Image (cartoon, rainbow over all chains, first blue to last red; front, side, top):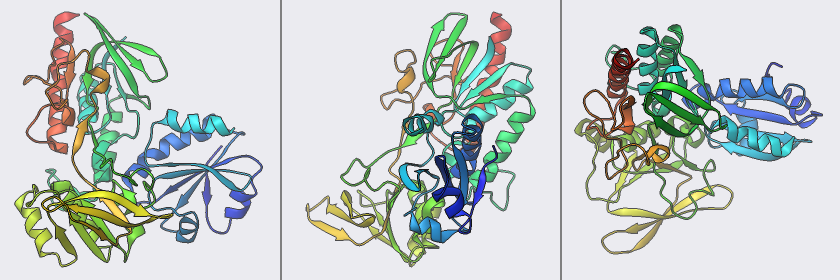
Length: 106
Length: 305
């Protein structure tokens, strides 16, 4: 499943009202670790297809959402379930660390 | 069996991969976090030859990765738990417990930024505490921040933050900076930077986000508070050698001791980049180490197999 590009206009539909958990990757073009984390997030999107939705939010283009969720460091990965933040991972971490967090929730 | 397994996907590992694969060796790079390494955190690299206008750490590493891929390097996102030496055959045990056999190993796992280990640091990581000004600086536009440290990285990042923040305090435990003169000159000339020498951070304070740091004068013991919303920490590095310390000879600071062929104490196991004992840790020197290590690994294979 392709990752969803998240914006203020589709945030409610794609994240808050999603019927499966959502992993949101908060990133920005200037952030080196963010660009390098992207392939890991893409792998996870493939491996968890159907069980997890993966979305990417550009904090540069969508600052309101970044502020709403108190993002002050990127990359931040936030896991949403039933519209609520259930976990978050700040900074570049090993893939297995992300998978461990997901397994606790899925 | 692999010819070479390279542990770490920064400048040293990627260059070793490029040389090894280009030399026809079956090559794997294991990187547990992100390919590119620490230089990804740098907004601009202006001392890597060939880029007279400077280049961002991210773009430079994108090029390194593409060039290694071009020659057919295999890459995975796995950490390495341990390495084993059984003479000609060596083993790399991945974090998922897969055990890979290889003729040679190049350890290029780099170093990690040190933490302050003061109250509040962990609690506010991502909520005002950062180790990457390039990534997070933009969230502090128009706000006061502090940079902790007095080396090249601390000053480079303080100068970068001065473009965004309303004020940048540089807190350093000594009475003078360790950074190179050109950076010191630029930093002292920048009106947004204020230097606080002979002070250490005792606590990072806040409620939901950081709102200040408690600092202590190392001469008098006097405590004071700075009102800042961001704290950027650049207080040196620790080599990532824990997983090889039983097998590989290290110096007292934990860096790997190699000879001029990048050979460790174990034949067929090499080290390259920031992880080794070296007087200079730059992208350029890491890349150079990687090239030497791969070339000598290839010669080792020709002699022994």
